[in-house]
Length: 547
Image 1 (cartoon, rainbow, N blue to C red):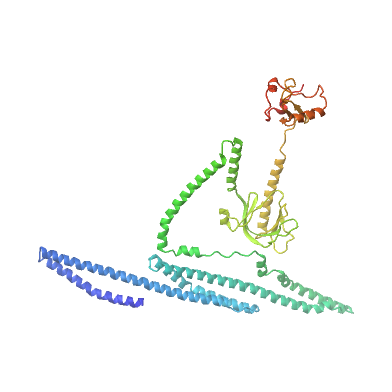
Image 2: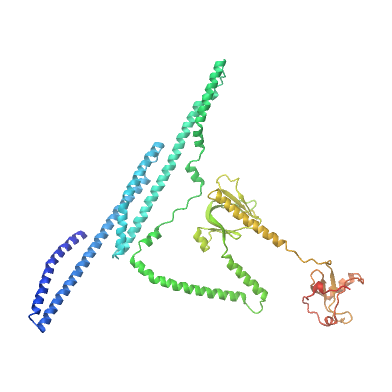
């Protein structure tokens, strides 16, 4: 229908050629009449000429606009036709790849692989049509076509379906290669078994020969058997090797490929969407700046409310609070000692209790300071969004290769003091050793730090610890009605502890009489006149004097 309209438009343009000749004659006649007439007649002739030329230019503009619109819709319908044909063809290709017969032997697999290669050749042959269709769709979007949104959806649909065709072909080809290797193994195993059965009669023969010639013949025959056995050794060694299918089962599950839909959404973006994003970008910048300002204000307020709750907080508490906040801020900037994908399995929850959930789970693991943290991928590591609880490491943690675990290779075990045990599966032996080395280095450094803390030297006093009762006032000036509380001085700490008068009297009855060589504290008269306050006094051991 669009082509019919284009043909009608071309006929209309041919008719306009005759009209253009009439316009030229009008211009020539206008020039001729302008030389004969003057005044109002001349002005009227010029105005008529201007009106005709204006309408002629307007008609030409409408013709060009109509032609351009028809060409756009012709390209649009051509694009839709190409897209429809490609869509149907790709559906047929996917159906053929999924509904192929299952092979039964090596020759059947070879036949299927040849057919699969022919499908690949057909896919490559259609690549030019696919590129032409996509480029036509992009051209329509760049021309700001009225139906750009439909063109965009069709381009995304075709691109996703083409990716699906490629993925299906690759998966089918990989499957055929695995099956071919399995059938080849079965064929070689059957041949080897047949050869063993044929040689079994010779091995079970107990004939040793009755004469020298018979024995020599038997020896030659046995040597031939040994030579044939050496010739078959390569075949039996090949049977010992694992097939690709068996190796694949031992590997951790491969993550599915991420969808390319966001890439296609960005590639086939219409002009309306691009224009709509421009003011939103400025709005996002303004919101981002306001968010930063609000976060700074909130952080400053929280620090003030935490550090300055009142006048009663001492400078020591203030310093400890500041140090805690500094430590919490620096913890978010700690370097990652080791990171990468690991599969984790929880074996034991305690010393005598197995874990309830003992399945292998794959995480993006990071060793940060004294913790093993588990994320979905590296992006979540940057944002700090963990998938499960962290594992805290200390000097009692042990890590070693899991030699007793037979189901998987490259597995190491992490044991904790509370009885929890975890298995971690690495990609290869090198990565496993790197993880073990990193964890062991941290454990050894933490144990050294702990030993240094426990070996801090204490101040030793030269005199043995003695406890001396010191009255707060002299015996001559103390009042019997109001006995003041005594203070107890410990020579090890030099601290004076207040005691009640009753306790002092009970201890004075049981203590022996002091000799002249005992240590007597010097109590000044000024201190004896002051009432006891019950607070700890400074001085201690070094304020005492020996007589």
